[in-house]
Image (cartoon, rainbow, N blue to C red):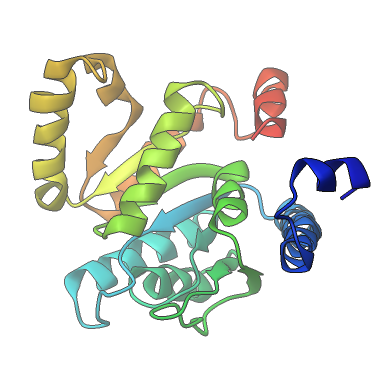
Length: 241
């Protein structure tokens, strides 16, 4: 901080300057996360990002369903990307690990819950949620969202917003397990649409399915007329993420 700025802020002391310097250096850490993510994930296309609760036990039907979906996607030629942790994330990586295509984990450093699972061909580690979220979107040909909590809802809202506002390409967004999502979808319709905060057309941004084969078929149906490579216009949008 220069002398003029110091004079304008007489209470600014050495501790404040040290804090500012530390914040400034965080920029390089953030840049490193983006650069590593871009370099390591650019070659995994096409890929599908799978989301769901970290708290789902191994013997739960949701875990088994996620594993089956990931295996079906992997054997169909899709790399599978998850958050790298336990629960549904582990099931997704485990299914992909058993399949023909790479299993990728985008691990986040958290005080609790996030323990890296062992089923990852490619593992990236992030300190910042926002840089990790960009990686989930940037290379995804589809989003598959299984039952989960706040983190799962956060990722779902993120991709819905980006597609709705045309900040990224339109990709299949698939909610798995109709019974689990029915209450939220009713609230969308009865409250959000009724209040005018979203439109009825926004229901076309996603679909709700139940079986692994339905998920695979829906993704292929979306791309059968256009192919997996983004158009020139879509590539420009992805650069702005």
